[in-house]
Image 1 (cartoon, rainbow, N blue to C red):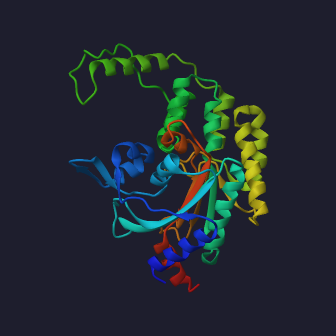
Image 2: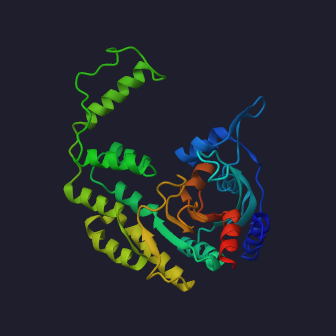
Image 3: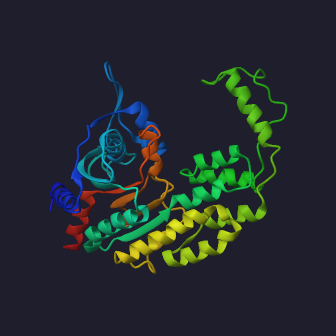
Length: 350
């Protein structure tokens, strides 16, 4: 079966699950959307300048424009599906295509978010079952809750939250805030001590120096809190085992309690859909190198290690608030790459 035929088959399956077919423009306004995708997509987006419409980009994914349209005109609840090309620059185009088909499913429902998570995951699991792919799940919301609950300044918590999707930078900040790595010296710095280089004004440089100077006086994170956060970053286990572990550290890090409750409710919902949560892989850090609009449940399905993920998805409640000018609705969705499905079906003759 060709990639287009695989896409049409999956597209039909999403429609059979109640999704309304939608289309989005291939050329999307870049100014707002680029900020929502995160560093990886921003670096790989094809951007051009239009004399009338301003800065535009070739569509790098469907979720953001679908959410944007829904928040302007959509009903509640709603479910959508789509099929079309997306465009991303690649460092090694001989290994990964710069233009490829994407088929996806998005579900907006404020009544039972964990049930919605389970429905989307189980639908993808069912459609991809013949390929014997490796599923992976995580929950960005647990890590975000842990950071928000730290006994430190709002500035430090904001810095950690901003870099959740940049694991190396996040780890470097955590090492510094916990005292494992020395802070950069800022004594006796002054914005007039050197010529201006780059785009920052002297006022911006002075403000940054002041912030660094103040940060240097802040006490390190409490050792127990830091240890728990390091533990959370490395948590990998079957989902039910991970839940037991999280319940165990919850009294020591009470801010994660609501997120862990949601995790437990999601596992119950997944089990009701026939998913074996005793063997379902869970990683607390899963999804931290993908799209930055995910803020809760995340999942992916993987074939051979030399291939990109066949499918990815997750929850993006905060994105709906950004695109809804303050009005939000819980939402979850995912995408599949039909070309990879066709490739794997041919290889396995399924």
